[in-house]
Amino acid sequence: MPGRIWHFTRPMIFDRIFLLGLSWRLIALVLALAALIYLAVEPGLHAATLVAWATCVGLISSLWGYVQRTNQELARFVEALTYADFSASFGHKREGFGFEQLGSAMNAAVAKLREERGRAQDTNRTLAALVDEVPIPLLTVDSEGRIELLNKSARRMFSQHKATQLGDMAAYGEGFADDLARAPVGERRTSQIVIDETPQAATLSVSDVRQPRGLPLRLIAVQTIQGELDQVEMNAWRDLVRVLTHEIMNSVTPITSLAKTAAEVIAEADDGSDARIGDARAAIETVARRADGVMHFVQTYRQISRAPPLRRQTIAAAELLAELVRLFQAEFTAVGVDADVSPDHLELYADPDLIAQVVINLLRNAAEASIGHAETPRVALRGHRNRHGRTVIEVEDNGPGVPPDKTAEMFLPFFTTKPTGTGVGLSLARQIVLAHGGSLTYQAAPSGGALFRIVL
Image 1: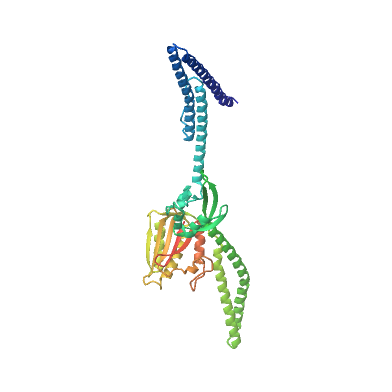
Image 2: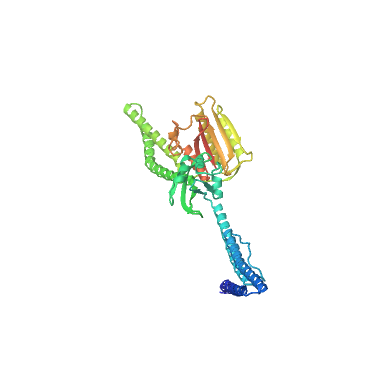
């Protein structure tokens, strides 16, 4: 309550003092004018008339200055509020006529506004810092298609191409730019974004906010979900393979055992005298062999249903890739290898055995694709660090590449384009990379061959 009394009392004091000063000036002016009129009609009072004139002029000047001083203070106060000049001060001591009370009230109002503005600025800085640290990329699009990246995550994601307009986002995929422009407010839309030449699934969450001038502004959160989708897909395939192999083994195991026993029995009974027994023996032995083949096939696929245990450690990429190149050249002497690691001290944190298995399998696939297709089969093995600080290993060949209609299926279990393939290699490689929290992707190489990229 004391603060409230202070805020209201001072203007009231100024009001009373101001009216008092205005009143006596008006009364004095009226009396001076009356005296001037009286003296003007009386003959011989010229000196008194001049004094009356001077008094009227002085009182008018005093009245004008008195009112003008108030107007100036009010004008300065309004101007300070208009331009947010909270350093201005009003009223001074010993001015009299209540101006010190008016100035104190104005100064108190300015101080209050300065304090509130400071709190608002502190709040804005805190909110800006929080937004900047949000791990989900945030951007805004205004009514004219201008884009602003709001936080570090957005600046990292979209650092490959500088984007200031909505059309600039076409560098990250034509469909992505369209989705940014048309995604409905209040809904989540799935889109595809191309980061470092790698297509990734992403979700867009759009909110509609208003700028201070009332103009519409779209706030968009972009979240990549490719890793989550890959993991869900691999878990689904693992569960499916686990069920299938379990059921197949339960059914085939007794068939295999009985076929082997029957083959042994009929082999003892076949002395060559009866052709029918010989035919039956051949048929039963064929069944036994095929049953063994089915069991081997099922055992091969069972490894897909088991998540590989990881024993991570820091690995010097140059040493690991050099060792893999030596192993590869010992097996494929007719295939040239171009190896490059940049920088020389490049490291990765991974299970060396599992990552080596993935890379050597990719190298073998690349060699088999190049042999018979290119006159001089060659394979490139590269290691580097991408813009986001993650380690990248690439395997490229000059083979025929993967047909465009097969790229969506190439990492699925059981899928293969090789006549003698099992469809396990790429699926297992992808599972190992996903277990490291990375990604394994394919794209057509500039030379027309295949380019596989591991990001860890």
